[in-house]
Image 1: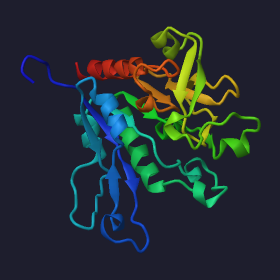
Image 2: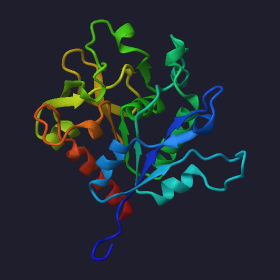
Image 3: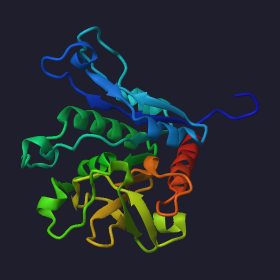
Image 4: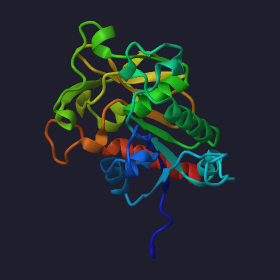
Length: 261
């Protein structure tokens, strides 16, 4: 790092894959992974990105004295990446279908991680599931399935996966409106759950213009907390239909630098 200052250290929450019944080899183990695209999106700004593992105080192999609080103290910011549904039990509901039960283990780990970074007053950026988890952590609820519970809503995911794009409209006078200098744009949409009731001390930063489904939220307090329902890491460079989301990344990293100094 000769000639440069110390790089910003950003933590990324882990996606957790649990052992599969009757599986052998690696699929018989608990896997904690990051998705390559989100890592590449962040490190393009010469950031040190570290995946934060869930911490077992009484692990099967050995006891760890490291806590998630230690990561929050060491790192400069946190990104909550996408993945499995947030369990409806996290906001006081029973899953309407078995496949919507989510991952309570990951929920508990990320809730604690979010809490520790908030306590340390470090910035947090939530992507897709990450935005939903922020909303639930602040006391909000989710639609377990947009198509079932939000009548007349547009399609927010499809078999096209990371090629499925729809528009969002920014809240006038909001952070995103200021960052982009535009009323909105196209985003990669891969979700069937969404914000139903907004959490405390949060405000809406963007919605889908055709059905008002919430697409971005921001914390009202001084600490930087931003969640986007879309996947900025899947936006193609130079695309004329998808937003270039580097302004979001730069704002998040600027907040991280302020906390460092």
